[in-house]
Amino acid sequence: KYIFLVRHAESVWNQMLGGNYRLAPKLLRARDHQLSEEGLHQAQELRQKLEKHRAKAETTPNFTTDYHSRFFRKKGMNIFCSPLLRAMQTAHYVLHADDGWSHIELVSKAREWLHHEVPGVRWPTERDCISEKGNWGNKITERALRLDPGLTELR
Image (cartoon, rainbow, N blue to C red; front, side):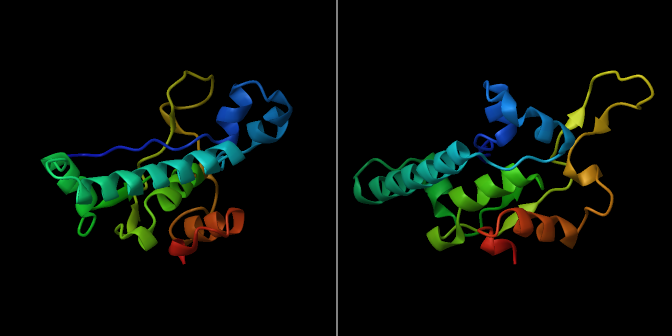
């Protein structure tokens, strides 16, 4: 069996940590961060690279390996994703159903945990959108669509 992992593209938090500190006041209050413009570009670029690689695997003799055949088979492949917006955006824009990928399943426990000792806080503790009041189940989808209407497969 194979497991293929894709980390989320650049988020606005990653962008801020890279030196764009003017975003810090707003981002420090937020618990979930969407992809930056660069992150959206990275996701689109990865989607194009995967499709180019798939086309090459289909047309080049002896190019397809067990790895390629399993990865590009797509049908029946489970796609699991964190419910964090940046992860949902990356999964949606890279592994899009229009390209034949399977449904993306959100995994509630695939998210960030704070593992630093903070006075008065039990740890590890959640440090993301899921721990916000009222953000569970369909509310996650509603919130994601409100923040990024392009996530059409979540509807």
